[in-house]
Image (cartoon, rainbow, N blue to C red; front, side, top):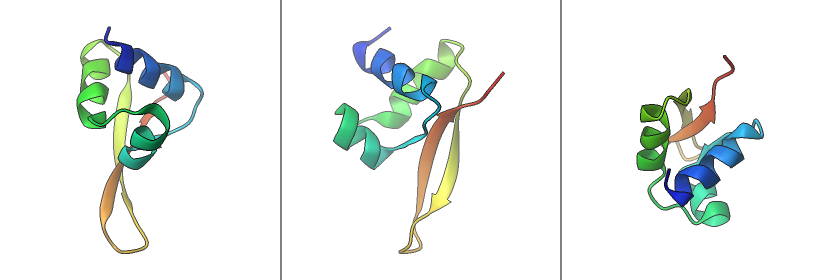
Length: 67
């Protein structure tokens, strides 16, 4: 598994969710959707949910679902 995927998985395992901005600022991951896709293909239950920002735009928030 790529180092960024491992870093993202460790973060998500804490129970936190993450947006693209959070990933860029805290984990230096600039392609969050691709890393989340890699985790999904590896069998991890990563989901994304759309969230509306105060300006009315939609962003994706990623998290692990409890199984």
